[in-house]
Image (cartoon, rainbow, N blue to C red; front, side):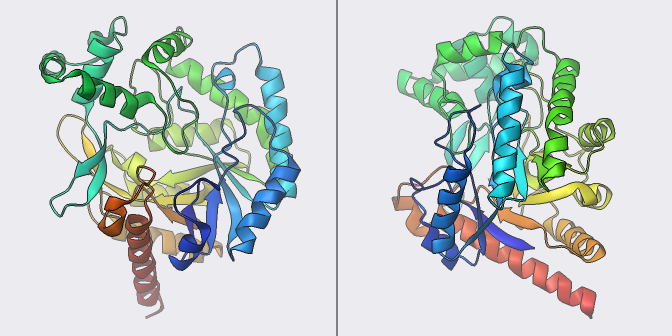
Length: 387
């Protein structure tokens, strides 16, 4: 595998030199300062590349080139935004990028309800608790009809939870869910978020899938012509929240997308953490069956809990069956004669990073530990193949 680590640009608390010392040979990054929908200029791409290469690292994977909400909704500005996306792809190809990651989740990127959940060893992890989402959705956001989206038991639990929270706890929950995280596309207030949800009225899963297909049909010919592979990141979490549809949550979702848009440029970022929240996603089997389409790997693991709750586990722990996944990845790379870019994801905040300012999920030491574990696992499995 080509070992990478995510870098959020010049303002990232983790410097490029530290990433290089972690054992990564490349970073995955984006022009986070460019507004959604605007063109990424070749000049800006080359400037970012020069900064990365001066630190002794490579850059072949973008994460992410955001898809504007008006593209997801097929809004009135669709044509202009599609043209801008095509130009950005052309410029990225000219700037040496080979893989472009994106997602098609309405409004929110990855969502958690606790960014510093303490583990038994004192390290901290990201955690998602559906009851906390319900408490926010029903009682703080006050989305019309929200209670209908939860079980009666969940509604009761959410009411008790909200009643027990003081104003500071409610504000913290709001900020955690919607105020924007590293890599997220937008940042909202509660009022803004409720209004934004309203812009998706009438857009169900079938309509969102159709809009996703329309997007790919419009941009894949440009990507294919310029040697770019577009890879979709799965929904995180992989089910509907806040009444918004999500359509890249299962292997069947992905297989349908590939069938409807068979372009070689239409690929997958296989995130074992996002897909792994659902026990019906067979992660090693997905590597086997979707292998040719996989252009980027996020290898992380979650520990499932009851009631659609989960937290980020160690990279070799939890429910991901990482050894089986890695065995399938090693076999895929040998079968196809390529090295797939991989990055550890959502590492624990641990050791000295507990006293440092870090981006949630993107402290250095937890990710470095994860990368080292994945590196060792790959080498051990490769040696067994050769033996």
